[in-house]
Image (cartoon, rainbow, N blue to C red; front, side):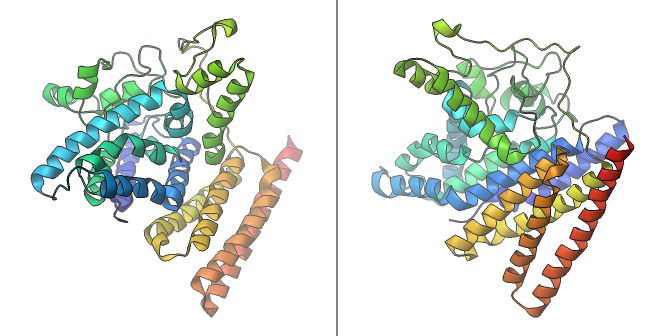
Length: 408
């Protein structure tokens, strides 16, 4: 039940990102921005870590329906996997479409994936932390039909893995027959565009036929402008998940009438009652005045954050592969530490140097965790050296920043 093709494919994801970075160098084009790419990956870390904690709830939901409400128990075979692949993709289309057309789902389960103003393979990793629980509701008919949880998770994982490679501008158009049948980078660039003509189009996972059948297909014409209509303007992955929910809660609070409050939750994003101006359509993009959110901290701080990001990423990978071995409380503690770390690093990337003292506290916490997990004399050495070395580096970074402020 712990089989997860998405996590097993993590090394492949970073190999392909490496190829895209090489492509960027060869073509001398700007595909990646370090701050945005780190935030995308940190959002993916946040999503996977939270899923490791409460993902068991969604899997348990599926297993419960399969065990008590299924009308059959389908044996695993090549033909059952093929049928299941098509059905998973069909229900994914409807979840994906609903997560764009129902405000509650948009803000809790999906908007995070669209927040990046760039379009590259790191964007594929940028996922909401709450999407898995809500998406499972759309897949429950498969449990009723009689597909077991192992087969479902395997096929669903393959469906998600397919969607990784389509998050790129390095591939233009593929052969016409492939573009007609399957989701491609061209089709998915449209989906990520915030131009009005592109919004709520091309919801497919792997098979483009669903959009063609149900009237949501849009061909790529001019190059999309990426992102959401209300920019997030933050490198903090924790805040990126919370901000849309806060915005929706404020909208509900300011909307008069109980029925109207329910409509805010379940109608399309942008819906307003008539007395508040009615539906607010997405504005046209003015490319002359449009600029991406892009804060540049002191280079010394960027270098420190990048090294810490690599350390947290490595620790997270280890956690994801081994979390089933931990007791619940240890799993929760490690998950909180990882979320704290990526949030803290995001804040530092926003050039908020007043948060540097909090980073010293995080380094001490890191030392304690290393000592606990290694649980040998060498663990004490590694933990203490980690805090001393990076603490000294952080002191120098803080000094560089202060001298730079004094000079300016």
